Image 1 (cartoon, rainbow, N blue to C red):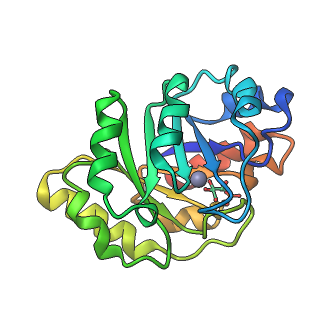
Image 2 (tube, rainbow, N blue to C red; image 1 turned 120 degrees about the horizontal axis):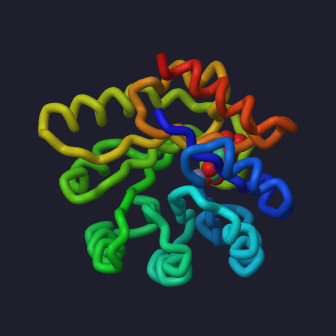
Length: 211
Ligand code: DX5
Ligand code: ZN
């Protein structure tokens, strides 16, 4: 399993970015518009300053209503993945094609309270499913048990010979990570960034899941 670091809580501190960079496998770049979520993230220009030092693949998590506008804004970061929320649009197919047309892999995120059946029609066409284990909006929340969703996606992928990546986001720590062993990527924010030693925390997470 890979560990993606969310720098939502430290994006103001440029000097911390390098530590995070060294500790994790990829950067989970949260963007909130203050409409889909209660509060917005910092202006993109400020985040961009910090992102310059990142030398790991970037996975963008758009928690926004105007998906196209933000896709266009993040293209310059050359992300490996752009993920949008299924709750933010009536036409996910349109945005799947739009993101693919830019040569970028595409993910769909699904909130804990959303009917999980909504995701199935798109599984053939996407590269990543982001299962939210908190309500989008802030880091440091308690993990909501979404283990059954991971199992379903894992089995569906195996049975249908698909290859999407399963990523879990929210409330991951050294205990909750034990419940999500079938996932491919775990996003960790506050568990890592609350500590002074990011490397140590990331390694603890890895040791819980990678025998
Ligand atoms: C929540 C964000 C998450 C969050 C994770 O809205 O999408 O990526 O930053 O932070 P922790 O790991 O602290 O729950
Ligand atoms: Zn996120």
